[in-house]
Image 1 (cartoon, rainbow, N blue to C red):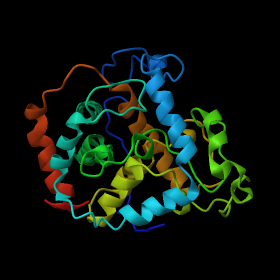
Image 2 (image 1 turned 120 degrees about the vertical axis):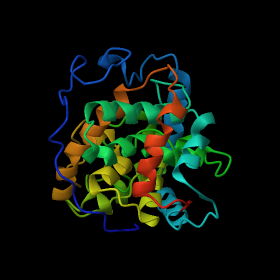
Image 3 (image 1 turned 180 degrees about the vertical axis):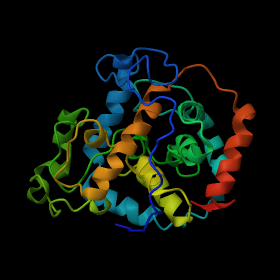
Length: 298
């Protein structure tokens, strides 16, 4: 895999107005009970969501993900644009793997960012605000500029090259995956050494890994914590279920807390009500200018 050295660790989140993780103490308003989020059994989007996961779990193989990494980590698509321009591409994109929301993705990004900003208003956490806004920008792979299918871009991510863990959503769909019957990949560690670290694990290809590569390849100055949030926010078996610990190392363990802090904003801030984009655009544009070049290679 393409390996890069991320920026140094930031200071702990010691100035938040509220860090308790309960429906009444999240620090921001949620539109439904926490237990109603990530409903993969009988949501009104169930058919679309299950189809997306069936395709993902069937076609995301070790070799496929390696190929996509090789293709996209070069950032040589010829497409050059700024962060805000990329965010505007999400205006017409709906994530078909998400049972909680069918609103355009730019609204979700800003809802996440504003929820973080409300709970962590101190300017020293501006990188955290920005991470909320940009974390899903890799979904531009669904746009007409790239035209990748939904199953290759969205949904929970999972390690490839080793046994599929039962904590994965729609675990039963993996039975059609060619890797499921490959002896190289049928053990707990598979092709990996124990505790090799997530940097050395091939994850299912999607928007998380792609935008992480965009950040690194364009010399973003976001801290390591932000890069972990971007790269692994969809890896629910790890940050929610404590699985795949046989593959993680001490750095992953340290960053896990940050990914979990981010997750509650990503998940619980979803709201069908539109957000006033033009009102808050100047603030986020100032953060983009701070942490990214004006024009990026994609």
